[in-house]
Amino acid sequence: MTQIRERSVLFADLRGSTALFETLGNAEATSVVTHTVSLIAQAVDECGGKLVKTLGDGLMAVFDNAADGVRSSVRMHELLERVVSRGKQHGASQGLSALRMQVALAHGEIVEMSGDCFGDAVNVAARLLNHAGDNETLITKEVLLGLGSAMKSRFRSLDLIAVRGRAEPVHVYVLDKPQVGDVAATQFGDIIQAVEPDGIRLVWLDLDRVFDIGSMPIVLGRSTQATYCITDGRVSRSHARIDWHGGSFSLTDLSYNGTFVRFGNDGEIVSLRRGSCTLHGSGSIGLGSSPTDLSAPTVRFEVLHFADTEPLPLGQSRSRG
Image (cartoon, helix red, strand yellow):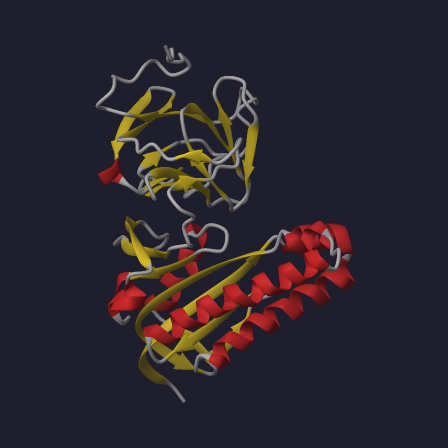
């Protein structure tokens, strides 16, 4: 029987499962992934949703309302964290410890037919997963409008994002993670006290642009609809995203080949694979391979403080007298 209904559609996807197959072998890795997907699927039933199908290392579900869908997403992240934490306590492989999850929700009219669901909301939710970083939940504006004020306050806007296969961009929101005091943690060096910048400068070949805080988020990618378009075949359509949050710029990898950050001219290389790090000072961002690969598409960056000084040519350091 075919039915047309208003539904919130949720897609969840495990990342890092490839490493499990490399470390555990096919049989054991398949068992772990299947068990983990079955576990997070419990969150659908707990929150009054309907599991439409599992998708290898992910799932699709629908909910009568947005609030139940978001609650299910939060519960999924809690369940996965429990699996990963228990694995670490019992000396599980690094592959299990590296499991991450992305969740995306959209709301709208869908067609329910033969146990499956179809429609614009289904397509948008599925493709939003490509814009999500590790352990992120992304929702559309239509989902946000269906939430109570307390739950709405947990989301922040990523503004309009171009979604593949859709002519109109989608207003997307991300579920905030808890913040720790007023410091910004980075994957490079120690935790540093946040000194709020005003903008960020990006340079690739002759594409030299300065973005202020109001321009966030910046999507770096090959798509002509990306905020900062890098026309190189090794770059994903939406490869990485720069957000402004908590007084600092955060870079999140959205690709399958990874994003690599080098701080300064010869600093440590930070490898982001669906992960994030805080950008500070200046350095370079390698899209798909390390900035040390001279043939790789590399974007140089400088975090700017407009009130203090004009930006210097990238690669030239500021004296601290």
